Image 1 (spheres, rainbow, N blue to C red):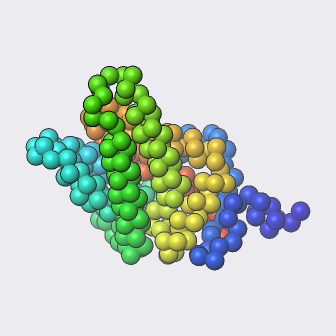
Image 2: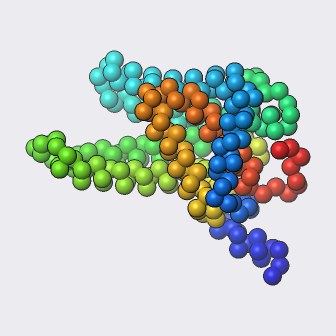
Image 3: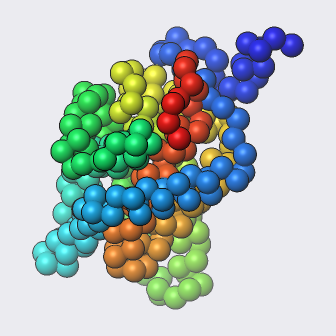
Length: 264
């Protein structure tokens, strides 16, 4: 069996009429934990930048919650989330740049991370808009589910459990869809001068080809998010940068390159 045929067997998408698809490697179940360890190492090597980005990631959901409590107007959540979806990829790019600089044995800096944010700005804006549209769609679905709950029922567990179960299943499915589309899209856009379609299809290919390890990685991210909410967003200060750094290492570990990388 030829090497080319083996490579095609290992990739879910081998050809696309929409865009080029960058091949991916086969992952092991232990790989997501390796990425997490490397992410923690990067956080220890760049504590100031880690704290800076972590505070921003923690401040955004806190500010949204504060606005809701201050105004009593829950519709403020929509424009706030839209703004976050637009700037989120750029914040993540700053974290990826820190890990990239550390891998090359360079000293990371805030200014270098800011410059990295605009390296592929047009397609990164496209990613932000794509995430924004998906989030708006999810909010509309959530509103429909909420509207289906009969207002005359008592809010006890027997009545709430079916409603919560439907919301949880639909929310989990939507979350997996977003993960499927964007797991490594942002790192691809930042490091490689490719279009958004190429980055999205490459990310989809890597997730589909490595369903088990990538599902485990999605679970680790979800756990970090739950811990962040349980600690009133304080946990995001440390957890979000670590997840960002680990995502970069996951991208390096997963997506093929034409030449061997000369950094760890």
